Image 1 (tube, rainbow, N blue to C red):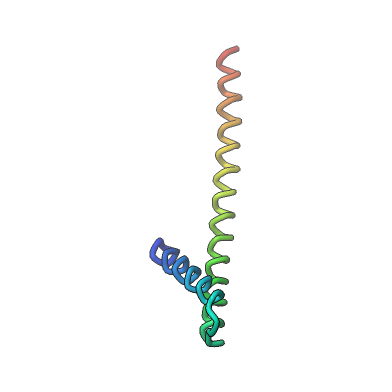
Image 2 (cartoon, rainbow, N blue to C red):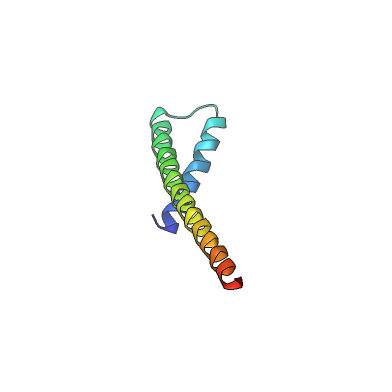
Length: 74
């Protein structure tokens, strides 16, 4: 998902928050907001998984570098 889509989803999220505070909102708009927020959550979950993967790879690399440094000092 591109940056433009992320910005659009964030904008839809903000609109949904405003709709919650308003007194009258059409059911069709609420359904649309529900779908957009679900898409936003799905994207965030995917992004979170990707970040966690990079963190795990970074930790693995860090450990290997430390081991290599210990070997070089011997």
